[in-house]
Amino acid sequence: MAIGDTSKIESSDKDKIEDVVKKVRDLNARLQDVKREQVFQREREAEFRDISESVNARVVRWTLLQLAVLGITCTWQLSYLRAFFIKQKLT
Image (cartoon, rainbow, N blue to C red):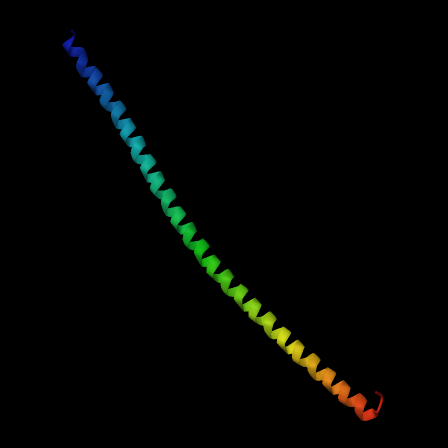
């Protein structure tokens, strides 16, 4: 057994272990960055979804309003024309 050589082995092992520890810390930092980015993206997507649903609801309401106005206008025109033709004795 060589006693003096074990200190060299231990010091080189410590350097390797420190390198591994540093790499693990870097990976943990990157993982935390990825998690933060995912949370941010989820929040943005949720906000976008809420805005899209709001806009879609407004579009549906506007379309229904237009259909109602169109229906009322058609009904009024038909009744006016019917009254006009009756008055002119065309029917």
